[in-house]
Image 1 (cartoon, rainbow, N blue to C red):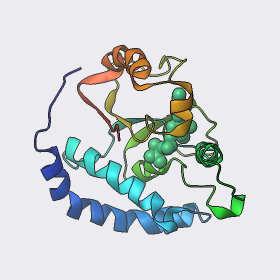
Image 2 (image 1 turned 180 degrees about the vertical axis):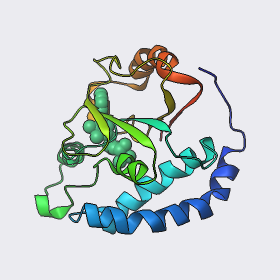
Image 3 (image 1 turned 45 degrees about the vertical axis):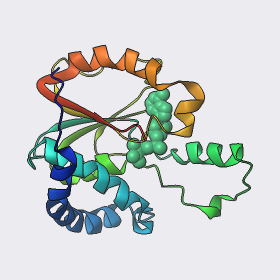
Image 4 (image 1 turned 180 degrees about the horizontal axis):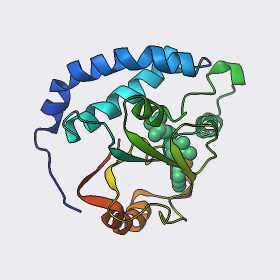
Length: 198
Ligand SMILES: C[S@@+](CC[C@H](N)C(=O)[O-])C[C@H]1O[C@@H](n2cnc3c(N)ncnc32)[C@H](O)[C@@H]1O
């Protein structure tokens, strides 16, 4: 695994915005048709895809076709549980109608499928009836044995470290100590690990 520092990543992400906007124009009607219950319309889904796609477009030089992209904590159909937990903890009363059930669904993996990439989604919750390869694994406990050596172009991890469910069970250091040796094994020599901490 090579550690690359993109000093100009922010500039390049900004430059990629036109390309990403075009991709979103292509994606939105397709995703809305496939997932009519969609939270996408309420913006959160669109933002979630756009932010992550911007980085992935830069890393892959805009060539997503056939790229194998592993999304850790990709979201699931049960993903709203984490949000419920944080609201409850904050003492906020709510009903299921207060917000969408679909906010943390695996939007990035779904979008990458539409764009010709080969996403693999991993989440501790069940993922059913999705078009992409997915595995139910707890990253704090399980290993990535299902992923072959040197097979991944990009590992993406977005809003996992800051999710309430994650911080309830583990911490950044614990996860990274477990993950890094495994990422060295599964990433291609030029592969990139992209994650956020805020
Ligand atoms: C805030 S959501 C983000 C979902 C998605 N990445 C997105 O950007 O919309 C965090 C996700 O991380 C998953 N997660 C939290 N802790 C995990 C763990 N230890 N192992 C695997 N997945 C985990 C949760 O189930 C949830 O789907």
